[in-house]
Every structure is written in structure tokens, then in C-alpha cells.
Image 1 (cartoon, rainbow, N blue to C red):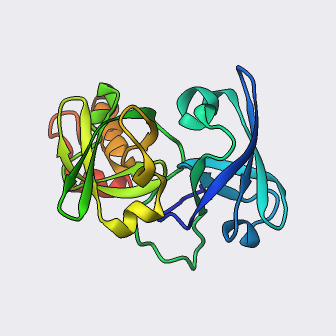
Image 2: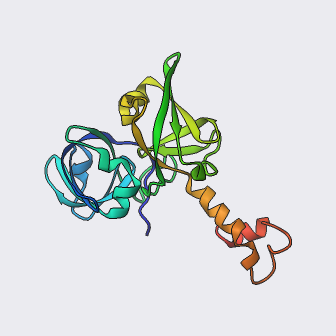
Image 3: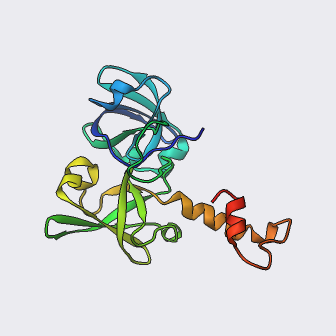
Length: 222
């Protein structure tokens, strides 16, 4: 079964140490609660990146990061003392309060602007344009693993708004202009795009002329 998260951050951990080279990274994270329910081999989303615990202690866990993770995420930019969002993977008895998050980061975004709107702080995040097609207004996006609602869009950025409670519960609340964040777009949009692009490959002709139909989506798991 695939590893899935909800995007509901359980705690903010702290980087204890990193051993970094050009193609891999070993990271040790301090944790007060998530690690107490974890064992070696468990998956822990760290700033939205699905990591496997290779060592656990009473208040820490250690994970290895392969080259793809080093290239694709902001973990390579961390240093000792930095805060990170932590979430244990979803189980069959876990409540689903955010949205389905895989822990497979699409790209690193950059905080372009931070503004106040009453009690809220609005973060505009610049993102690679090729991923903007998967982000829709009032849809969901994972920023450093936190499930957030998209409130606005440009051709190369999206905005999210944080109430004071959320500002204190996730690392985005401490970010400043120019800081890097991990962005994971909604998985459903990618599946729909794949189905649309595969219309010409249909063997029974059901989409070759008629487009995507309700029957087609049901047969493909939607």
C-alpha cells in the first residue's frame, strides 16, 4: 500500500545535525511526540518529504535522503537548529482532516511576499510554471507538508492565508521573503491530466472521439 499523509502537521521538530554531500544527505531530527509512536522503517513526513526512519531514540530519529530528494527539496538548505514540520504516515484508523498528500515533493517554491490582512498573514509563493496547472483557486496545496487552501493565483505563484493558530503550528509561519518551501500539488489533477493525454491510446475507442466521459472516469478509478 502506498504511503499517504494528510497534510496536518503533528509537531514542529528541530534539525539536530546533517551530513550532506552532493548526492545524499543524512539528517537527525529532534521530536517530542511523533518519534514516540515511530519505529525503524516507519515513514515520517519532514517538511513534506516522505522519509524513512533508519534510527530512532527517545526524542529523535535519523533518515537518509537520496539524490532525487536532495535535488528536489529544501532539505539540502537546512542547518542545525532549523524547524521542520513533522507528520506520521496515515493509518487505516487515522482521521482524514486535510487532503491526500504523498510526501513526494514537486518542486521548491520561494516566498515572494508576506502581507497582513487583519489577523491573517498571506504568503505568496513563487513556483515553477509547469506545476501551476495543478494548482487551482480554493483547491489544496501542501507547503512544507502542510495542507493549505489556495486563495489566489498568478501565472507563476499562488497565495495562502494563515490564521494565528496555523502560524504557530507550521514552519511557514516563520518564513520570510526569499525563503524556500517544498511544494506538492494535488495528486488528483495529475491523474486527470494523465487520463486526458492517454485518450488517443484507448483500445475500445471510448475516448478517442467522445472525450472523457463519466463511464471512462469510473472505469479508471474516479
